[in-house]
Amino acid sequence: MQASEVSRAVAAAKLIASSLDLAADDAIVLHDSNKITLRLLPSDVLARVAPVDQQVSQFEVEVAQRLAESGCPVAALEPRVEPRVYEHDGFVVTLWTYYEPVTPQEVSAADYANALEQLHDGMRKLDVPTPHFTDRVEYAQQLLANRERTPALADADRELLSDTLRSMSRAIGERGGAEQLLHGEPHPGNLLATKNGLLFIDFETCCRGPVEFDLAHAPEEVSEHYPGVDQDLLRECRILVLAIITTWRWDRGDQLPDGRRLGAEWLSQIRAALGRNDLDTHG
Image (cartoon, rainbow, N blue to C red; front, side, top):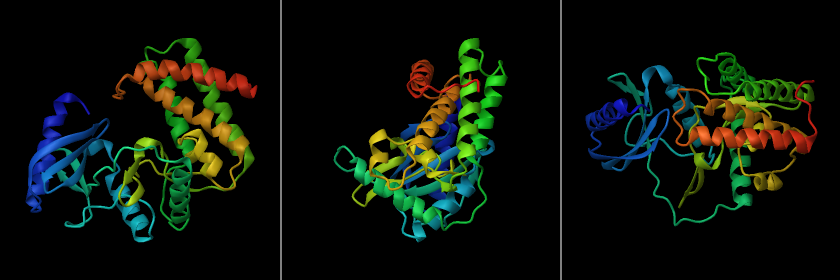
């Protein structure tokens, strides 16, 4: 979130919480990217705040609520207030349970895989309209085609990313595998280690696709503990996901800290992955 917006976003969250009888004398910023995540004290509630024109908060609330009701390992909404989206001063605010982090420890790959499998099982039972993972590919291609949005990207790198997005997306589609509702970005940053166990957060990224697309966001060893993985499909998904997130890092509006350095590093990883797999992106 732009620095000029942060103070307004914090004020909006505190005002909304106070209007709901949740004391919010203080706000601690836990995460700041396209939206800001706050811990409001002394009520100890977690608030997620986004500009009203950049959010799908109602969808996220509905999905999280239904998954929680079915016993999936997901972070719960704040139980003291109505589970809905609140709006003030051009921002939308959603309120969630705050989970005190457990003593820092490495999450085992087996536990990670088990939690993701449970999440996927619950998601198969949900019938909600969601984008397809190829919509994310299309958006990345639009960024690459718009040099004003990605002015610092070299022509050779632009071509590499565009070709990789096209060829990997086509290869995945041609496999014709089973598809279902997915988290969309179940990377370690969206997994909380709590006294209640591992819990997934951030469901605004849900999409439809093969489970291997979700697994491509997790550490490589997680897939070794997830049943029935198509390893060839997973390799293609890993390269596709890497191409998508690399493209995002070159968007002039990207707000990820150190994003440009990561973008350059990931370009090298894409070239290495294509070389290892002897994949021709011009096919």
